[in-house]
Length: 431
Ligand SMILES: *Cc1c(COP(=O)(O)O)cnc(C)c1O
Image 1 (tube, rainbow, N blue to C red):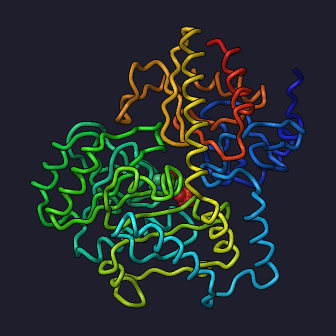
Image 2 (spheres, protein in one colour):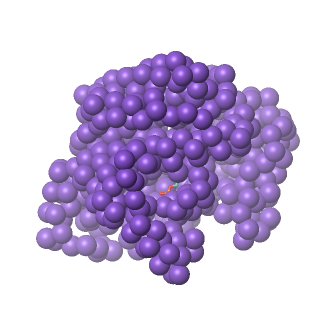
């Protein structure tokens, strides 16, 4: 096994001269696992190839969008077709209507609150706009978010807080004035009590509760269904809105996302990742009455030069057309296989690694008896062990997320044979 990354090392040095940290998004820089990032030149189905010609089975999948793997032919064809017509218009085009119709008509059958949609260019933008809309609609200020849920780099949501009772978030990023997050209430997940306390304290000023219904940005913190149902109930009782941030879970745990999985109807849903088929698309959707508040119909301003970009719409549409029941069933089977075999191997090796999974999202938790439901249950020590595991995998042709807090994604081109390659690498790992 001669694993060499000389060219990547060289380009990384060059990158450091021009790009802060050598990257355009922080986790890519390998800071949480040590070492330097690899540079990819080509990707095909479930494999990626770096500039040193190493080949890796890809469980990152661009952090979630690529449910059908890299360069699916239908998506490539749709983009090529659109290339003949226009790259960007800033004037309406039919593809925007087609993608909107595809999302609304299919999802509304299952989630009746999904009635109107607006496209943006990223998950962050979708969340930022959804929060503004919720505040505009309710005419209230405060937002409840949960520790361990990531909603993009929206200023007012870049807050975490110690576990325990309601605390007003200290910004967890420099450059965010405290006043920007003074209306953000950060609560621990999995705790009904603290939410009731927040409503007691601010009965008339909580605009919305926002949650990743399947929190997947700080480990995979699968919630009790009753907790999510409680959020639906408590928001309705207090005339606040419930926002499900489905940027990861949307179209991933099934076409209807987590809303469909749990059969809960949020007022607003945010989408990203899969909805663009690999191009930059985000969206927020929800009840018509709420969306009447959005410009140009209503007073809540929201806009975008590249929003509804025809190439991105074409890619998104082709992607959503690929998402059949069969595809989800196939991914579920592969996921079951991976989870079962992974846990068998680690158990037989007395390695305290376990895989938890929902549909085609998986996460490895280390030195914990049970899968955690709250962010504070994950120890930073386990991250050091993950770093070792990550590099073992990388060296042997498996690309996992370069952080133990991040989940992995299966893609439809992966075969059981591909998964066996990963399992074999796992079986040769020792802490
Ligand atoms: C990825 C993600 C975002 C941010 O999306 P970007 O496209 O990276 O801006 C927001 N919310 C959740 C749940 C995400 O997983």
